[in-house]
Each structure stands twice: as C-alpha cells, then as structure tokens.
Length: 342
Image 1: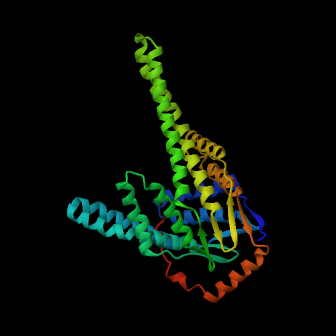
Image 2 (image 1 turned 180 degrees about the horizontal axis):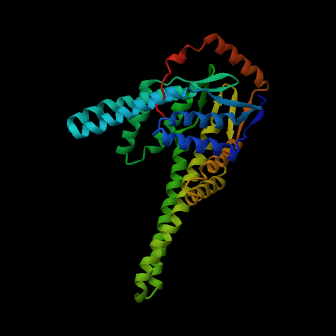
Image 3 (image 1 turned 90 degrees about the vertical axis):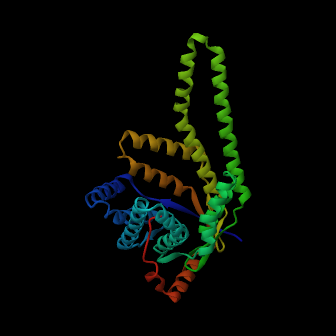
C-alpha cells in the first residue's frame, strides 16, 4: 500500500520554557512540593503543545488536583512503610507482601491516566492493560532476571515495551509492535561485548604500564591508571547509554504500527551521546540553570527524527476515529481520577 510520510516537529524554545521551569521550581519550593502537580501539567502541556504532526499540536488535559491526590496517597504509603519498620519487622514484611501485588495495578492506573489525558485532534489516547499480564511483566520477570543473574533482562525489557504499546490505543485504533526478544538480545550482547573489550583493554594497558615504567615509578603507575580510568569513565558511560537508548528506541518505534500507519525513527548514536554528554556537563557547570536548555534541545532532536508513514488519506482516518470517539463518549473519565507520577 502506498503511504505518505508525515514528519513530527518540535517548536519549543529555551527562553519560553525557562520562564515556565523557573516558576515551577520556585512555587514548588514555596509550597513544600504541593505545586509540583501543577508544574508537571504545565511542563507536559508546553512539550505536547509544541509537538506537531501534520501542522497540528498534541495536547495534555490532566487535572493537577488529581495528580496531587495520587502523590499524597503515594506519600502516605511511603510514610506507612517507613514507620512500620520502626514498629515491627513482621508488620514491615506484611506491608511488603501487600505492596508487591499493588505495584502492577499502580502502573496500569498511571498509564491509563496519562494516555487518557493525551489528545491529538481532540481524540484521546487510551490504555487497557490486563492486571495478570502486568503482574507477570513487572513482578514475575524481574524475579526471573534475578534468578538468571541478569540473562533474562533483555526479554524483560522487550516484554515491558510490548505490554505498554500493545495495550495503548488512539481513539479505538490499537497500537501494536512486532519487536522480538532476539533483537533485544542482539543489542544487549553487542553492548556487553564492547564493555568487556574496554575492560580488557584497560587491564592490558595497566599491565603494559607496569612493564614499561621502572620500579622506582611504580607508585606513579598506580596513580596514572586510576586517574585515566576515572577521566574516561563518564564519556564511556554516555556512549554505552546513548547506544542502548538510540538502538532500542529505533528498534521499537520502527516495529510499531497503528492500524495501517507505521512509525519511523532514525536517531543517530553519536549525536545522542553528544547530547547526553554536553547536557550533563552544561547542567553541572551552570548549577542546574541550563536544565531547560538541555530538555528543549534533546526533545527537538528526538522528535525531529520521527516520522509517521500514513495511509494515503490520513484526514479520513482521523475523522473516522473522531466519529467513533463521539459514539463511545467520555464516561471513563470519572474512573481514571488518579495519577501516581510514574
């Protein structure tokens, strides 16, 4: 089928977002964190409102009061757990047994809340995850990862992405992904191989240094290598993280579809690594004041690398979804009245 290509665009500006960000920070401090719920909504509305597809922005409609309710509930649960440890280890253990099966439910509720309050062309997104499936993905698989000494982690990462995408929808149209566990294992095995090679290279360099330098300079050799390793650790960490992020993001997006529409992502590893590295350095040396600049430039690059391969007449597809949404109504809104900030 012939498809047309529609690029995603981001029009956010650092100066505009800095004003929102600094007000959010100041009011959150003054109100002892209560305003953080409003800060989250203002931030998301700015980024959604500046993300365009076919000359139309996305929108975020969440009520900050509902987010605050979720955060207060989460805070109360944390306090209850903290004090239980002081009262009785048995009570602490009982609460852990209660909280573990609650965790998948919390994830589902948060995804439902955030997708339900995300819209495009006045059509809401939805999430309809199954609790037992979430229990397996977010509780069962992490246990399997621990017992397999990490070997099951790529499968867990794939299942986590697949659970979110396959249970999400735009209007009545379901998203789906065809990504496989083998593709995830390939990416993590390459990363592990490169990491092992770098460690062996460092060990070999250390051995060569010991042989080249005379015994009188052994103390210098013992200082040079740790200093060199410490200097190179941060850039290496950025490269590893940047590689995993870009390859997994491209893999998942390029295997995701919405009915007959396909998504494409062409993030480049080195550009993403440079963004992470330069953002971190800039934020540290500006004492955090360049966080808005880092967020805007990262969002601009990530979104500019995404495209939507649509059916020949995307307007007809959207109009059909709008008609179906009107028929269903918005009665779900009263049920999705809480967000846990996940």
